[in-house]
Length: 277
Image 1 (cartoon, rainbow, N blue to C red):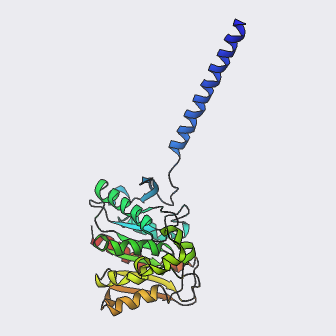
Image 2 (image 1 turned 180 degrees about the vertical axis):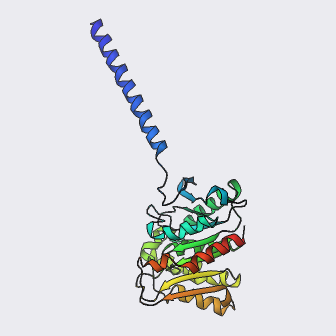
Image 3 (image 1 turned 120 degrees about the horizontal axis):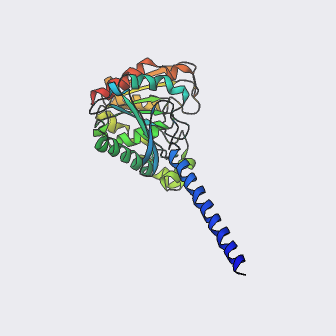
C-alpha cells in the first residue's frame, strides 16, 4: 500500500512539473510574440489595452521632439504592403508613423478615447511632437477626422486616401450604430453630433491643412458625399487655400498604385509633420 502511495505521489509530482514547464514555455512564447506584425522596422506594444505600433525612422534621423504621422485604420492587416512605399519615405525623411487598433470604431467616442491614449503615450512618454499629421485610408478617414474635430489644437494636418467622412455612405448607420452604443434610429437622430462630415466646419474654420486623393469612380466611398463635400465646406469657410483634393479619373476603391505612390501626399504629410516638431 505504501509503495502504491509513493508511486502516486511521484507521478503527481512529475505531472505537476510537466505542467509548470509547459506553462513557462507558453508564457515565453507569448512574451516573444509581437503585439502586431509590421511592414517596416518598428515597435509594437499595448496602449489602453489595445495593440499599437510605431514605425521608427533610422536612428540618425530621429529628433526631439519626434515628428510623426498618426495613421488609421490600424486593424490587424494595416498598414499593408500596398502602403509600404509611402511609409518608407516617411521614415526616411525622419518622420515616425504610429497608430492604434480601435477595432471597427467608425469614429465613435470609444475609438477617439484610444486615439487620445496613444497621443498621450507618445507625446508625454516618448518625446513625440505635440502636433502630428493625421493620415486616414478609407474608413480610417472617419477615425482621424472625428478625432481631429475634437482635438483641433493637436493636429498639424490631415492626409487622406479615398477617406470616409460621412457615416451614411460607409459603413452605413446599421453597421456603425453598435460602435456608438446606439440603435440605428438613435444614431440617425444624433448625426449632427457624431457624423464627421456634419462638423467639418470645425476644421475648416481652424484652417487645418488637408490633402486628399480620391477616385471619381469610387462606389464604396463616393467622392461627392465625402472628399468633395469636405472640399466644399472649406471653400464656403474661406479656407479653400488650406485644402487640396486630387481627383483621379476612372479609379474606384481599389489598389491602384497611384493612390499609394502619390508623391504629393507624401510631401504634404512630411511637411505638415515637420512643421509641428
